[in-house]
Amino acid sequence: MYRAHMLHEFLLANRRALIDRCRTKVSLRSDGVASEELPHGVTVFLDQLIETLMAEQAADPLRSQQISGLSGGLSLAPSEISDAATRYGKELIGSGFTIEEVVHNYGDLCQAISDLALETGTEVRADEFRSLSRCLDNAIANAVTEYIHQRDLLAETKQAHALNERLGVFAHELRNLLFAAKLATRAIKAGNVGVDGATAGVLDRSLAGMSHLIDRSLAEVRVTAGIAAQRHPFSLVDFIAEIRLSATLDAQVKGCAFTVSAVDRSLAIDADRDLMLAAVGNLLQNAFKFSPPIGGVVGLEARASGNRILIEVQDNGEGLSEEAMLTLFQPFTQVGKDRSGMGLGLSISRRSVEANDGTLSVRKAPVAGCIFTIEMPRHTLPAGASIHS
Image (tube, rainbow, N blue to C red; front, side, top):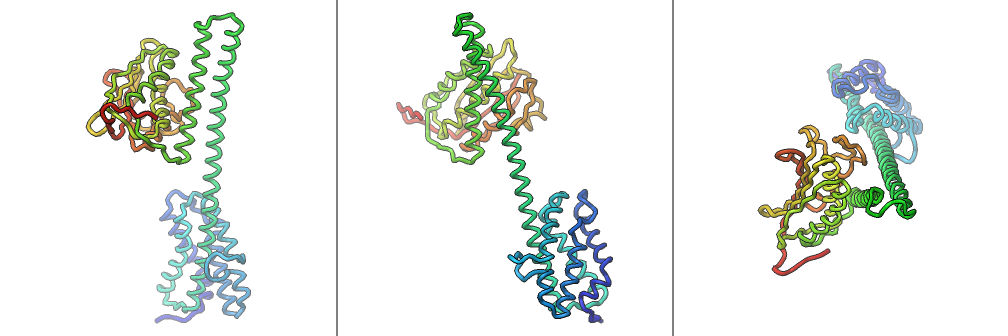
């Protein structure tokens, strides 16, 4: 037998029990998240709901609207529920709750009211249930809106910090390289050193470093901004020849032996040439960087394998552990002894390759070092043809 009670009387009489039920639901569902109720949580909403129902029972629609707002969720006219829910949304994200919890936490109270009413045989009138639904709708809409707003602000702040860090490291690297180049140039101009001596080597290293830094940064800007790859077919042998020219200087500066295997002249790649140059260039720079100071050897090979083209860069450095290889392509990751640079080269290389429908992987070399492999769809040039960028 159901007993007829005004909903606000039922809520007042069972206020403590309803709050306890909601807290239990939250603790069971949100393991490890804040267990204490937030300042503008369920208790505040329950009291505002009771006030709304009492105002409607007293035929005071203006007061009811001031507390709970109009139907339809968000409203241009503020209400006490919308204000508290907005603050609650901000508190939830600050306490580590997910956006799903924003909805569930209000739903807990609705479920608790329904369950307790059924257990006690209390009837909830249709008009009162509509008021409850309106209050929930407005509260959830405002809380979710604020939660999303705060989440976006946090994301923007995080991105801004990351960008500032990148710019700071970029400027620091560029300044150091430029300063070294200026000193070397000044010494050469003064006639105190020869153009083929150690000072000239400093100038070469500085110019090569600046070139790599700029190329890497431009590639990162393109892939991060989601700029579509400007793809067109080009000769693989011409592509490798261009890379060889620029990498030879790096090899000389580092004192590494640099080998490039012969390439089948019929092979071609359909890709964004600039992005691919940056990708392979980063791999080679990384290989030179981690090759041993004496006896370092870096190899570049491009060949066909079935319907794929493989471009491989191999070094004979210390190599990497299985654990290190799992995180190697993540931004700002540096796993070797040489921690110079920003740790972005390999991340940029992978994103540049993937933007051209390719893959980039790494494995241990048979004897020492690592082998980085770029896999691209295979294309073939017509007989006697040569496609350039």
